[in-house]
Image (cartoon, rainbow, N blue to C red; front, top):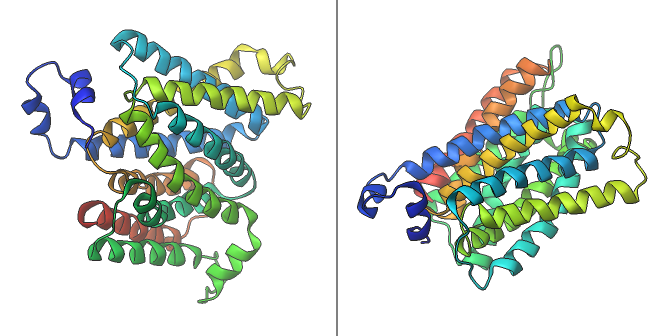
Length: 317
Protein backbone atom coordinates (compact mmCIF):
# COMPACT_ATOMS: atom_id res chain seq x y z
CA UNK A 1 0.00 0.00 0.00
CA UNK A 2 1.35 3.37 -1.07
CA UNK A 3 1.60 5.54 2.04
CA UNK A 4 5.12 6.67 2.81
CA UNK A 5 5.54 9.55 0.40
CA UNK A 6 2.13 11.11 1.01
CA UNK A 7 2.44 10.83 4.79
CA UNK A 8 5.37 13.21 4.61
CA UNK A 9 3.05 15.79 3.02
CA UNK A 10 0.61 15.63 5.92
CA UNK A 11 2.85 15.39 8.94
CA UNK A 12 6.54 16.16 9.24
CA UNK A 13 7.07 14.25 12.48
CA UNK A 14 7.76 10.56 12.97
CA UNK A 15 5.82 8.46 10.45
CA UNK A 16 4.53 6.24 13.26
CA UNK A 17 2.32 9.10 14.46
CA UNK A 18 0.58 9.17 11.10
CA UNK A 19 -0.06 5.44 10.99
CA UNK A 20 -1.50 5.43 14.51
CA UNK A 21 -4.69 6.95 13.03
CA UNK A 22 -6.38 3.92 11.41
CA UNK A 23 -9.63 5.72 10.62
CA UNK A 24 -8.02 8.76 9.02
CA UNK A 25 -8.77 7.36 5.57
CA UNK A 26 -12.48 7.17 6.51
CA UNK A 27 -12.65 10.88 7.31
CA UNK A 28 -10.82 11.76 4.10
CA UNK A 29 -13.28 9.63 2.11
CA UNK A 30 -16.24 11.11 4.01
CA UNK A 31 -15.00 14.61 3.20
CA UNK A 32 -14.77 13.56 -0.42
CA UNK A 33 -18.37 12.29 -0.24
CA UNK A 34 -19.67 15.60 1.06
CA UNK A 35 -17.66 17.50 -1.56
CA UNK A 36 -19.06 15.30 -4.32
CA UNK A 37 -22.64 15.94 -3.19
CA UNK A 38 -22.02 19.71 -3.09
CA UNK A 39 -20.36 19.53 -6.53
CA UNK A 40 -23.33 17.64 -7.99
CA UNK A 41 -25.75 20.18 -6.55
CA UNK A 42 -23.77 23.11 -7.95
CA UNK A 43 -23.59 21.47 -11.37
CA UNK A 44 -27.32 20.75 -11.31
CA UNK A 45 -28.01 24.44 -10.65
CA UNK A 46 -25.50 25.81 -13.18
CA UNK A 47 -26.66 23.49 -15.96
CA UNK A 48 -29.88 25.49 -16.08
CA UNK A 49 -27.88 28.42 -17.54
CA UNK A 50 -24.60 27.00 -18.86
CA UNK A 51 -23.75 24.58 -21.64
CA UNK A 52 -22.46 21.27 -20.17
CA UNK A 53 -19.17 21.32 -22.08
CA UNK A 54 -18.41 24.91 -21.11
CA UNK A 55 -19.27 24.23 -17.48
CA UNK A 56 -17.13 21.08 -17.42
CA UNK A 57 -14.21 22.76 -19.18
CA UNK A 58 -13.98 25.81 -16.94
CA UNK A 59 -14.70 23.81 -13.77
CA UNK A 60 -11.92 21.34 -14.52
CA UNK A 61 -9.60 24.21 -15.47
CA UNK A 62 -10.36 25.92 -12.16
CA UNK A 63 -9.73 22.70 -10.22
CA UNK A 64 -6.41 22.18 -12.00
CA UNK A 65 -5.40 25.73 -11.04
CA UNK A 66 -5.99 25.06 -7.33
CA UNK A 67 -4.15 21.72 -7.55
CA UNK A 68 -1.28 23.53 -9.28
CA UNK A 69 -1.17 26.05 -6.43
CA UNK A 70 -1.04 23.19 -3.94
CA UNK A 71 1.82 21.60 -5.87
CA UNK A 72 3.74 24.87 -5.85
CA UNK A 73 3.37 25.10 -2.08
CA UNK A 74 4.31 21.48 -1.38
CA UNK A 75 6.79 20.98 -4.19
CA UNK A 76 6.68 18.60 -7.19
CA UNK A 77 6.92 14.89 -6.33
CA UNK A 78 9.14 12.21 -7.89
CA UNK A 79 7.28 10.64 -10.81
CA UNK A 80 6.75 6.93 -11.37
CA UNK A 81 6.96 5.18 -14.77
CA UNK A 82 3.21 4.41 -14.91
CA UNK A 83 2.03 7.97 -14.34
CA UNK A 84 1.22 9.04 -17.88
CA UNK A 85 -0.43 5.76 -19.02
CA UNK A 86 -2.68 6.03 -15.96
CA UNK A 87 -3.35 9.71 -16.64
CA UNK A 88 -4.42 9.11 -20.23
CA UNK A 89 -6.54 6.11 -19.21
CA UNK A 90 -8.52 8.01 -16.58
CA UNK A 91 -8.85 11.13 -18.79
CA UNK A 92 -10.38 9.18 -21.67
CA UNK A 93 -12.86 7.36 -19.42
CA UNK A 94 -13.79 10.50 -17.49
CA UNK A 95 -14.52 12.47 -20.67
CA UNK A 96 -17.19 9.94 -21.59
CA UNK A 97 -18.46 9.62 -18.01
CA UNK A 98 -18.69 13.39 -17.49
CA UNK A 99 -20.68 13.90 -20.69
CA UNK A 100 -23.17 11.24 -19.59
CA UNK A 101 -23.23 12.62 -16.02
CA UNK A 102 -24.08 16.16 -17.12
CA UNK A 103 -26.73 14.92 -19.53
CA UNK A 104 -28.34 12.91 -16.72
CA UNK A 105 -28.32 15.83 -14.28
CA UNK A 106 -29.93 18.00 -16.93
CA UNK A 107 -32.88 15.66 -17.51
CA UNK A 108 -33.47 13.81 -14.23
CA UNK A 109 -33.84 14.45 -10.50
CA UNK A 110 -30.59 14.84 -8.57
CA UNK A 111 -31.81 12.49 -5.83
CA UNK A 112 -32.54 9.78 -8.40
CA UNK A 113 -29.37 10.22 -10.48
CA UNK A 114 -26.68 10.27 -7.80
CA UNK A 115 -27.84 7.13 -5.93
CA UNK A 116 -27.10 5.10 -9.05
CA UNK A 117 -23.42 5.78 -8.36
CA UNK A 118 -23.79 3.39 -5.40
CA UNK A 119 -23.32 0.61 -7.94
CA UNK A 120 -19.72 1.69 -8.50
CA UNK A 121 -18.46 -0.34 -5.49
CA UNK A 122 -20.34 -3.37 -6.85
CA UNK A 123 -18.65 -3.01 -10.23
CA UNK A 124 -15.35 -2.37 -8.43
CA UNK A 125 -15.40 -5.86 -6.99
CA UNK A 126 -14.77 -7.04 -10.54
CA UNK A 127 -12.76 -4.18 -12.05
CA UNK A 128 -10.41 -3.91 -9.08
CA UNK A 129 -9.67 -7.62 -9.36
CA UNK A 130 -8.80 -7.23 -13.04
CA UNK A 131 -6.75 -4.04 -12.64
CA UNK A 132 -5.46 -4.20 -9.05
CA UNK A 133 -5.84 -7.88 -8.15
CA UNK A 134 -8.39 -7.31 -5.35
CA UNK A 135 -11.02 -9.92 -4.44
CA UNK A 136 -14.29 -9.56 -2.52
CA UNK A 137 -14.96 -11.32 0.77
CA UNK A 138 -18.22 -13.01 1.76
CA UNK A 139 -19.37 -9.97 3.75
CA UNK A 140 -18.32 -7.78 0.85
CA UNK A 141 -20.72 -9.75 -1.34
CA UNK A 142 -23.44 -9.15 1.27
CA UNK A 143 -22.73 -5.45 0.95
CA UNK A 144 -23.26 -5.77 -2.81
CA UNK A 145 -26.74 -7.21 -2.19
CA UNK A 146 -27.58 -4.38 0.21
CA UNK A 147 -26.54 -1.78 -2.36
CA UNK A 148 -28.71 -3.41 -5.02
CA UNK A 149 -31.64 -3.73 -2.58
CA UNK A 150 -31.38 -0.09 -1.57
CA UNK A 151 -31.39 1.03 -5.21
CA UNK A 152 -34.48 -1.11 -5.78
CA UNK A 153 -36.36 0.38 -2.82
CA UNK A 154 -35.35 3.91 -3.77
CA UNK A 155 -37.16 3.52 -7.08
CA UNK A 156 -40.29 2.15 -5.43
CA UNK A 157 -41.15 5.70 -4.33
CA UNK A 158 -43.47 6.85 -7.13
CA UNK A 159 -45.17 9.78 -5.45
CA UNK A 160 -48.29 10.73 -3.56
CA UNK A 161 -51.49 9.03 -4.57
CA UNK A 162 -49.77 6.22 -6.46
CA UNK A 163 -48.87 2.76 -5.25
CA UNK A 164 -45.48 1.35 -6.05
CA UNK A 165 -45.20 -2.23 -7.25
CA UNK A 166 -42.28 -4.59 -7.54
CA UNK A 167 -42.08 -3.70 -11.23
CA UNK A 168 -41.74 0.05 -10.58
CA UNK A 169 -37.91 0.13 -10.53
CA UNK A 170 -37.68 -1.73 -13.82
CA UNK A 171 -40.28 0.50 -15.44
CA UNK A 172 -38.57 3.69 -14.29
CA UNK A 173 -35.12 2.49 -15.28
CA UNK A 174 -36.42 1.51 -18.70
CA UNK A 175 -37.95 4.93 -19.44
CA UNK A 176 -35.63 7.38 -17.66
CA UNK A 177 -32.57 7.98 -19.84
CA UNK A 178 -30.92 9.97 -17.07
CA UNK A 179 -30.98 7.00 -14.71
CA UNK A 180 -29.75 4.73 -17.50
CA UNK A 181 -26.86 7.09 -18.19
CA UNK A 182 -25.93 7.21 -14.50
CA UNK A 183 -25.72 3.43 -14.36
CA UNK A 184 -23.22 3.54 -17.24
CA UNK A 185 -21.37 6.34 -15.44
CA UNK A 186 -21.15 4.16 -12.33
CA UNK A 187 -19.50 1.41 -14.37
CA UNK A 188 -17.09 3.80 -16.07
CA UNK A 189 -16.10 5.27 -12.71
CA UNK A 190 -15.40 1.75 -11.43
CA UNK A 191 -12.70 1.53 -14.08
CA UNK A 192 -11.33 5.06 -13.90
CA UNK A 193 -10.85 5.13 -10.11
CA UNK A 194 -8.34 2.30 -10.40
CA UNK A 195 -6.32 4.44 -12.79
CA UNK A 196 -6.78 7.38 -10.40
CA UNK A 197 -5.03 5.42 -7.67
CA UNK A 198 -2.22 4.56 -10.07
CA UNK A 199 -1.87 8.28 -10.77
CA UNK A 200 -1.50 8.95 -7.03
CA UNK A 201 0.94 6.06 -6.59
CA UNK A 202 3.16 7.44 -9.34
CA UNK A 203 3.09 11.06 -8.16
CA UNK A 204 1.17 12.39 -5.14
CA UNK A 205 -2.42 13.45 -4.32
CA UNK A 206 -1.94 16.80 -6.07
CA UNK A 207 0.42 16.73 -9.07
CA UNK A 208 -1.00 13.84 -11.08
CA UNK A 209 -4.59 14.98 -10.62
CA UNK A 210 -3.58 18.48 -11.70
CA UNK A 211 -2.51 17.02 -15.06
CA UNK A 212 -5.71 14.97 -15.28
CA UNK A 213 -7.98 17.97 -14.70
CA UNK A 214 -6.00 20.18 -17.08
CA UNK A 215 -6.34 17.61 -19.87
CA UNK A 216 -10.05 17.19 -19.10
CA UNK A 217 -10.49 20.99 -19.25
CA UNK A 218 -8.69 21.15 -22.59
CA UNK A 219 -10.84 18.35 -24.00
CA UNK A 220 -14.17 19.86 -22.96
CA UNK A 221 -13.33 23.40 -24.05
CA UNK A 222 -12.27 21.96 -27.39
CA UNK A 223 -15.56 20.06 -27.66
CA UNK A 224 -17.47 23.23 -26.81
CA UNK A 225 -15.68 25.08 -29.59
CA UNK A 226 -16.12 22.30 -32.17
CA UNK A 227 -19.85 22.13 -31.47
CA UNK A 228 -20.08 25.90 -32.14
CA UNK A 229 -21.85 26.57 -28.88
CA UNK A 230 -20.54 30.14 -28.89
CA UNK A 231 -20.56 30.14 -25.10
CA UNK A 232 -16.83 30.60 -24.71
CA UNK A 233 -16.72 33.90 -26.54
CA UNK A 234 -20.03 35.53 -25.57
CA UNK A 235 -20.12 38.43 -23.15
CA UNK A 236 -22.39 36.47 -20.83
CA UNK A 237 -19.80 33.78 -20.31
CA UNK A 238 -16.96 36.14 -19.47
CA UNK A 239 -18.78 38.21 -16.89
CA UNK A 240 -17.51 38.15 -13.33
CA UNK A 241 -20.47 36.23 -11.92
CA UNK A 242 -20.12 33.13 -14.18
CA UNK A 243 -16.36 33.12 -13.65
CA UNK A 244 -16.85 33.16 -9.89
CA UNK A 245 -19.27 30.25 -10.23
CA UNK A 246 -16.68 28.26 -12.18
CA UNK A 247 -14.05 29.04 -9.55
CA UNK A 248 -16.40 27.90 -6.78
CA UNK A 249 -17.08 24.60 -8.56
CA UNK A 250 -13.34 24.19 -9.11
CA UNK A 251 -12.61 24.68 -5.41
CA UNK A 252 -15.16 22.03 -4.42
CA UNK A 253 -13.88 19.65 -7.10
CA UNK A 254 -10.27 20.15 -6.00
CA UNK A 255 -11.22 19.50 -2.37
CA UNK A 256 -13.00 16.31 -3.37
CA UNK A 257 -10.09 14.91 -5.36
CA UNK A 258 -7.49 15.84 -2.75
CA UNK A 259 -9.38 14.13 0.07
CA UNK A 260 -10.13 11.03 -1.99
CA UNK A 261 -6.52 10.82 -3.18
CA UNK A 262 -5.30 11.06 0.41
CA UNK A 263 -7.68 8.24 1.32
CA UNK A 264 -6.25 6.16 -1.56
CA UNK A 265 -2.83 6.36 0.06
CA UNK A 266 -4.21 4.77 3.24
CA UNK A 267 -6.62 2.10 2.01
CA UNK A 268 -7.72 0.13 -1.05
CA UNK A 269 -9.93 1.58 -3.75
CA UNK A 270 -13.18 -0.38 -3.11
CA UNK A 271 -13.21 0.71 0.54
CA UNK A 272 -12.57 4.36 -0.25
CA UNK A 273 -15.13 4.56 -3.05
CA UNK A 274 -17.73 2.75 -0.95
CA UNK A 275 -17.45 5.42 1.75
CA UNK A 276 -17.42 8.11 -0.90
CA UNK A 277 -20.85 6.86 -1.96
CA UNK A 278 -22.22 8.36 1.24
CA UNK A 279 -22.66 11.31 -1.09
CA UNK A 280 -25.91 9.52 -1.95
CA UNK A 281 -27.51 10.56 1.34
CA UNK A 282 -26.24 14.13 1.06
CA UNK A 283 -27.53 14.38 -2.51
CA UNK A 284 -30.98 13.08 -1.62
CA UNK A 285 -31.37 15.80 1.01
CA UNK A 286 -29.85 18.47 -1.22
CA UNK A 287 -32.27 17.54 -3.99
CA UNK A 288 -35.24 17.78 -1.65
CA UNK A 289 -34.21 20.92 0.25
CA UNK A 290 -32.54 22.99 -2.47
CA UNK A 291 -34.23 21.93 -5.70
CA UNK A 292 -37.73 21.16 -4.36
CA UNK A 293 -37.53 17.65 -5.73
CA UNK A 294 -40.35 15.42 -4.57
CA UNK A 295 -40.04 14.14 -1.01
CA UNK A 296 -40.59 10.46 -0.43
CA UNK A 297 -39.65 8.08 2.32
CA UNK A 298 -38.93 5.46 -0.30
CA UNK A 299 -35.99 7.53 -1.51
CA UNK A 300 -34.70 8.16 2.00
CA UNK A 301 -34.98 4.52 3.12
CA UNK A 302 -33.60 3.20 -0.14
CA UNK A 303 -30.64 5.55 -0.09
CA UNK A 304 -29.94 4.64 3.56
CA UNK A 305 -29.87 0.92 2.77
CA UNK A 306 -27.53 1.58 -0.14
CA UNK A 307 -25.19 3.41 2.22
CA UNK A 308 -25.34 0.54 4.71
CA UNK A 309 -24.35 -1.79 1.90
CA UNK A 310 -21.49 0.49 0.87
CA UNK A 311 -20.35 0.65 4.49
CA UNK A 312 -20.46 -3.13 4.76
CA UNK A 313 -18.20 -3.41 1.74
CA UNK A 314 -15.86 -0.78 3.16
CA UNK A 315 -15.55 -2.37 6.60
CA UNK A 316 -15.80 -6.08 5.90
CA UNK A 317 -15.12 -6.43 2.19
